[in-house]
Length: 422
Image (cartoon, rainbow, N blue to C red):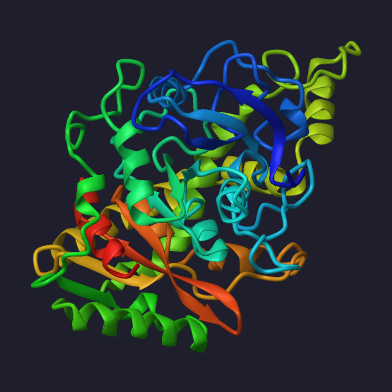
């Protein structure tokens, strides 16, 4: 096994039978596993061992899955490449010398390399779909509230969801069937969609389906990515779907709104890591403020510090209305834009990522470039919608993914259209 794919390799056995019996699952290292350390890819939690299982882990075990380890990730989920991990980067198993995407890069790499049949990732702004696209596998970001977040170490609560990564759409849908549904431990979960049989939707039947392509999500992408995208649309038209362009003007502001909201939530969520309540402690030297700041200076990486600083600034007195409130207004506008688009189309389609996988080290010097790479994925999280990324061939030998977005709890729709491309 590749040591960069997993932070901790540990076998956790599930029940003797169930829909996932005989299946191995890799779990992202920000999802709690009782008795098995859960680091979030950070030196801050290097020794942390949770006393309980996340709800999704309980459901995996009940379904008969064997968990084979905790996968590498960008520190606290902050990154698009899995290079901000305190444990070093993961290499893309299908594109040598390139990143696997992030922040669930270890999970996608585990599936692409055959180290696990399936994997769980988390998606705050594209962190399941990006690595799925970069590693040539399938990833589903469920509707907000479909899958319990109990036991997920929080980064940005209003945006994040746990979801499946798998070699095929049907396998991803089967894993979604296991983890979906309401949970008494998570008040944001919903009854809706709990009884759906997602795996049965992977029938490739798209005759009569209306697919809208938001021009704003295609314009900035690399030429080779755009070519593969339109090839995929041609395939779907040949199977009876209708494809036409639509406009979502609000997505132009999605990246700015997303980073203000995500960083603001991160700054309040990560305040607990002070070396006293949570996190590695350097010991008390007589001054609490200095002890806190030393702990945080030593144990957090650059990207996490950057986001805490920006988030704290955005929430500070005098700036709250200027940044945070504006970002929430942009989020409301985006939701309305999506709602009106879905009055006319069944699903929306775009390239998952505007470029093929970056070279290792390439984006670390330019965080802004990394943030802009999320342009096609973050609108989905802001609007709390479901989306899937499916492989759509290669450009210059590098994987390209196509993303399908559905209306709230429209998972079956995106699964169906995704499976038609396989």
